[in-house]
Amino acid sequence: MPGSDPYLGRMLQLNKYVVFLVHYIFELPLRILDVFGLPEIFNFFQRKLKPSSRELYEFESKLAQQIFASSLDLSQVRIDESSHVGTHNGKYAYVSFYYINCKGMLQLPILIHEIVHILQYEQDGSPYAFRNMIAHLMPPTYDYGGLETVQAIVESPDKVHDLNYEQRADIYSDYCLLLIGKRPEWGSATLQDAMQYYKVIKLLNQG
Image (cartoon, rainbow, N blue to C red; front, top):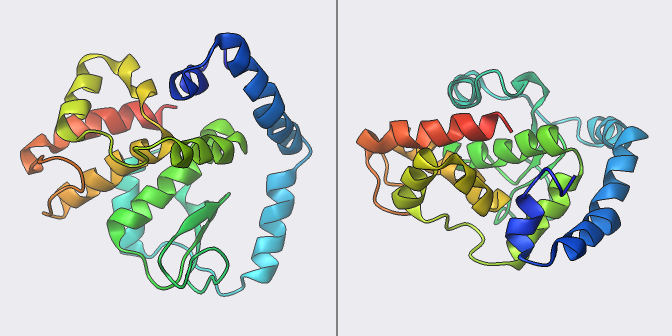
């Protein structure tokens, strides 16, 4: 509900009554579809139509387990590496409930980013898709502000609600980059800063 969840209000920056209206027009119908089993039905057809989809490889699962801990049942995650719809011949990857749709094998940071969207689905239900769409309509879509923003959230956890769903996912992928010895996509953090990122990730894992 928008009254207890500040995401819509922070993202839309509109009058609270307009935020309530947006919730009831766009999110409430999705929640009702969840009650009637839309995700389960959709996943049933995905299993039938994507027989070549796979579980996480062991090395992927170990890294994901390290990042997501017990917040997500990783055994439910499926990857369709031969998806043609919506991937623009490998340029994009996207999530449909528990399925990651892509063309070819994903690099670990991108894989972690997509698993975050599955976590968001588990936390919010189908409205996660609408909330993710908001992120793409209101730039900056992915740039969360780097280490400075991470440190600000550690000091004031409520600031996490200022981040859209794509920015949150990129905190995870940047943490992954730090763990494998690479520079983050956003900002100039180093491996020494990884613990700050993990503190924010633990907060996001809790929903």
